[in-house]
Length: 72
Ligand SMILES: [Zn+2]
Image (cartoon, rainbow, N blue to C red; front, side):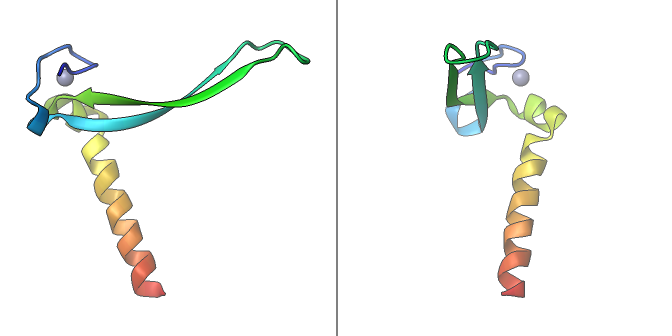
């Protein structure tokens, strides 16, 4: 698979997956305004993931989940 940021080929085991939520809208008012929601799985190489803070975000989320569990 290819890193969506730099296009480098990344082995699957080393690719960082990142789920992006996307929203498309026609920006029209009224009934013709169509909105589509979806999520796209993007893959980044390790250096791009680091650069964009994707790995850190995942760590942060795990940390927060732990804190919540401790509080409960
Ligand atoms: Zn990359």
